Structures are given as C-alpha cells and as structure tokens.
Image (cartoon, rainbow, N blue to C red):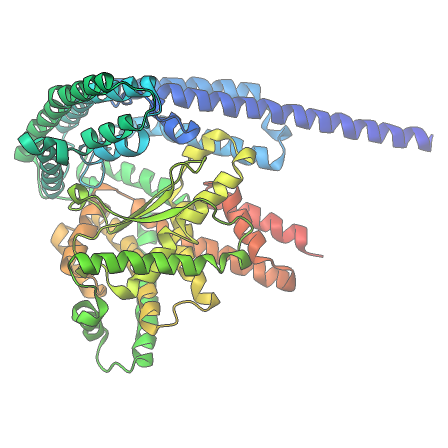
Length: 597
C-alpha cells in the first residue's frame, strides 16, 4: 500500500511537471508570435531585434496605422489569454507573460492619448536623426542592400509628408509643441538641409558620403555600376529627401505662427490624465504627482546637505550658493572650449571607463566584450541634443556601443561631473546593462529587447554613478561633488517635471528653480527645462528607480548578512532585461527567502 502511494505521488509529480512544461512552451510560442506581430507593425524594429540593416522603407507613423496597431494588440491579447493558463507557468515565464500583457495594455491605452504625444520634438525625430539612421542602421554588403538603401532614401519624402500632415491634425485639436521647441527643431532642420548646398554637397551630405563609402567596399562591383548607383543616390536625395525636408520646414513655420510659449501638458485636452499615465509608465509605481514632487523636494535638501560636507573637505568658506558660483565659473574645473579641450575630454573620459573595467570582475558575472566608443554628438545635432546619451551595440558586436558626448559648449561639461557621467553612460551603466542583456539573450524572449522601463533602465544608470563610490572611486572630493551634482540634477527633475505638468509652472520659474538649486549654467538649465517640457514624466524615472534599487539592495544585505552576494544581486537586477520595479521587488524578496536559513 505504502509502495503504491509513493509511486502514485511520483507519477503525479511528473505529470504536473509535464503540464507545467507544456504551458511554458505555449507561452514561449506566444512570445515569438508577438515578436513577429511587432515586426509586422514596425518593420524597422528588425534592426534592433534581428540585426537586419537593409530595410527599404520607414515605418508608418500615421494615426490611421496607430488604429491598426490598437486593434492588432487587442486581438492578440485575447488570443494570448485564451491560449495560456497563467497559473501553470513557471516563475520566469510568468514574469515575461505579465510584462507582455503590460506592454499590450500600454499600447492600447496609449491610443487614447495619441493626439497628445508629439511625433517629434527638438530632442528627437527624423529631422535630426535621418543621417544617423542611414549611417548606423542601413548597412551595405551586396547589391540588394544597395537597392534597399536607395529605396529608403526615396521613401524619405513620404515619411516627412506623413509626419507633417499628422502633426497638423494634432494642431487642429489644440496640441502644438511649445514655441521654443519648434524654434530648435527648425534650426536643426535647416542645419541638415545645408548639407544639400551646391558644390559642397559631395563633401557635406552625410547620407551621400555614407552611401558612397559603403558601396565602395562592396566587392565585385564594376565602376560603371558604382557611378550609376551614386547618380541615383544623388538624384533621390535632391528629389525626395530635400523636398521632404522642405515640406516639413513649411509645416514647422505654419506651426510656429500658431504656437504658444506656454509649457506643460495640463493645457491640452485630457492633459492631466495623460500626465498621470506617463508618470505611471516611467516610474512603474503608483505615485501621485504630489508624492513625486515632495520626494523631489526632500531629495534636493538631502543632497544639498551632503554637498555642504564636501565644502568642509575642500575648506571652502561661504554659502552653498557661493560654492555653486565658484564651481560654475572657476576655469580650473573646465576644459578649454576649443579642439584641444574637446580631444582632452574624450581622452580622459575613455581613460575613466578603462579604469572602471578593471573593477567589474568583483561586481558582475557578465563582463563587457563588445567595444564602447566615446563619440562626439554630430555637429548638426548639437543644438538640440542633450549633454550625453548612449547607443547600444548590436547583438553580434558588429556595431559597438557608443557613448555620445555633446561637445558644443565645454562650459556645460565640468571636469568634476565627467567621472559620474562616464559611469552612467558607459560602465557599469548602460553599456554593461546592454552587454548583460546580450549575454542572457538566449534565455529572454525576443520581444523583451524592445521593452524599456525608465525607472529600471535609467535607475540602473544612476545607481551605476553611486556604486563606484563604495569601491574607492571618486577619490578627488570635487569628483564626489560632481557625483552629487548629477544626483541633484535628477532630484530637481522630480520637482520640475511635476511642477511643469501638474502645478503649471512656466518656463521662467522652472529655469530659475535650477539656477537657485544647482551649479549648472543658465544655458544647461534652459536646455533641461525644454527637455522636461516635451517628455512628460520621463525625467522622474531616474531617481525613483535608483532609490528603489538601492533600497532593495540594503534590504537584502540586512536580511542575509554574510550570505549576501553583490554579483548575484546585480545579476537579478539585470538578467531579465527591462522590468517594472514591483517585479524587481518580488524577485529580490524571493532571493532573500531562498537564501535564508
């Protein structure tokens, strides 16, 4: 009897295990089908998902297509829910299934706010990114790739026409970019159009130069073929791309005549709901605008006090405001605003990253084996770009990771902030984050490559600024001050983002808040406010995410003591790709429970 009972229990265990496995396989099939749906709706995503670089057309950005997207997502969710029994999924598969449902819900909900979401702004859009799109994502290895490149040049007119026409539909509903943003978009657009000027075209046009360089590297092409391809490229750039830019520029000038200097999405229909939607999307937590605003005020006070401790270390006598003015104006803290100074910044930033790489083996399982290049922001985009940003590598390593630095004005790049900035954009920040995801890609559904939660991704970047402090970096007190000023910058974002979009702060009041509470120059403060204006909610994710990661780490250390493993903790934070903070908290709690005895 006892023997039969044991055999029955064993049989039931393996039967349940089999059912468990079958349900996981169904979910994985759903993940792959969603991945294919994504590629169908957004063909250019194949560049990011599949390392396919020869896509012949731009994605459809029309509101009509957005309606297709909404219907497709709703239909797919019903199918997924009908196919998969969620309670029978294992822990990891359940995480990805929940994220997939969240992504679908976000896409469907976003449709309600489609006319409030700007299709471009002074920070991003094809008016500024078009040359880089071709340079980075339109590779040429054979004749088919050449034809795809030419086809995409030809499609640029239609892309700009759709972008302009749809923006006019938004304007008819009272949604227009603030005047200051439109003026910057116009300036960048004119800068790119200057690349089409007469005799200088061959030298200045980045798309044409890129096309010629890539075609010249294709083996087996006859010179007569090359000349024909070059002629076609030039004809298409003038006939389609330049005319597309002109169409777009005419639209901008119309929008400028109707635009206001008022900022904040509160002014738009459903603007308050849209802001709360964005706040939840970027923080992944249920925080009200008032709560985020107060967190920001408290954090600003905390960081100010820590900076006062730095002032004591460097024997500075004076007020916090005096110290800000000193570090903002003293030449010892800045590179020369010339070619020599720019080269020195690039060299020193690279050296900082290389030094940090030597420490990574003590903190992480997965180490970078794909190059990271410190690269200047292209001159034509400097007016609209931020101070720095990161571009992830391709999974195959053919395209390296790139840490872009805006060298337009060296007074906006103080030496004391260079260390923290390099750690954020490079290692252990976004580059290591990308490497970790690439290394674990085989265990992560493909659709996750396109998932980005600001609080997790940028929270990691800010945590990466703090982490080296605990391991002997920031030896110079002024570099540690720079780390604090970077964190202060993110704390003021909580105050300003909610101030602009919830409390109806105007642009001058917002700029003055930064002038009073940070050491950043007026020009940087204006740039920052213009960014927060057009990206509602996004700026709140950084410090909210960093604080949550640090809170969970300290919780695990307190609970596990000597059993706590920093490598394991970092592995959990990064191994699943982009995840909401509440999911991360569940995973860390499980890590704690499984290691307690």
